Length: 229
Image (cartoon, rainbow, N blue to C red; front, side, top):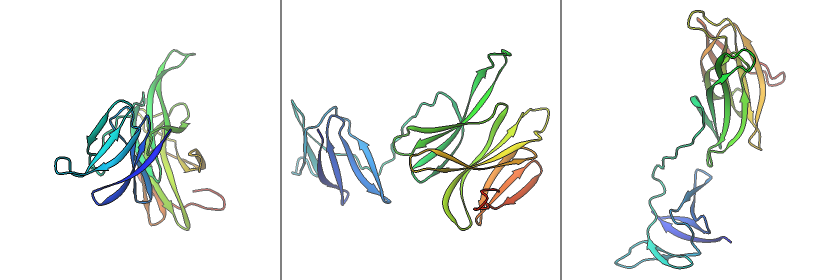
């Protein structure tokens, strides 16, 4: 069972969730943030304030009573998320991260090894992988941004790629992939644009997309009706 109790810290009201996985809940920029408490289980909590223990909390478990304080929840908490792959690019928009990663794979037919690139969508609170998009064989991820377009309030993830990258030869083909994120945290591929070269860099500019492709800078806009760049 879970019981919710309020308390004040740094002149703000927070919620303490008593359960077998206790946590502190606070709001910031219209988001609910959850901070785990380093106790295995808490059955009940109340505020406790005296000269020896100012601004403290009393936490009751099945076999003990603990009096302590909660660290300032505005402090930065470092969390390591194991991907099992090598991340090379990351972008963020409301509620999600998009991470470009690669891993070494062996071709079962030829026996040759190569790099496999994927885009993984993560929840920005739980860091759970919500969706994955695999790039084509022999396609390498080169750039990634989040941007907006004119007359469209939706944020987009934009990936720039190159085919058959080689240190001895400049790629002659690449792609620009445009994604939105659906309400169920799934990637929605909105548009694909084939280009003549690798998309080495991307940037948003005044509602347009600016792409560095080989030796050129191209400025693109999104056709909302045709879903084309």
